[in-house]
Length: 228
Image (cartoon, rainbow, N blue to C red; front, side, top):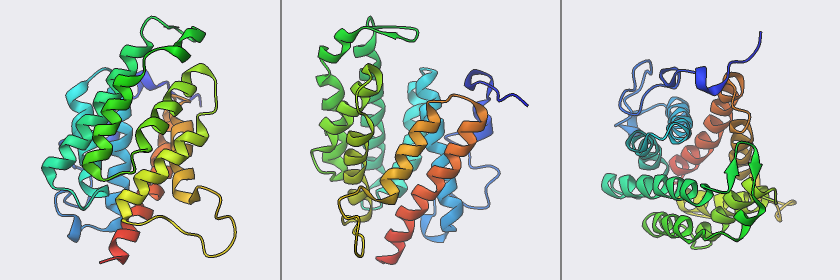
């Protein structure tokens, strides 16, 4: 059976930003929620955020990313988590503004490399400041987004940036017990895999992305729980 395209995939399949119907958890009570169920909920909300960005639905994207940030950044207040989500959404919208005029379908004008990406970095820096993420997160995420469109190495800056976000979420840098310490770790790698699946824009790949990102958030939540 042929996979359906993103445009034909109803957003309701992934839940909605304001409705946890279908889940056996209350998304507003993290301490009482089953870790795996909450991780999947966060994963689907992340996918929703990307979908709403693609569909240019700003407030819906903010709401979806907020439902993620209020749990992955457990040290933030609800108000601060809303602001981190809004900053991320602002960065996506700024990215679209920068790219306008340089992209025609699948064709990308090489001049996009030298465009002014500072509004994107500024929004990401705001997110980093609120959440306590290493300041390198903003330029590295911006570099990754730019290279993703222009054809450069986006996977390395993505994992650098995400490693910083993970550190802020769990309160400490991930460490391996012995070898491979020069790598970025399994959580950052899972996040990158989720992005790669997003690029495929089919229903089957979206479902795979939900599974991968559920593992990602389960790792974060499990480490948070272990620190309590």
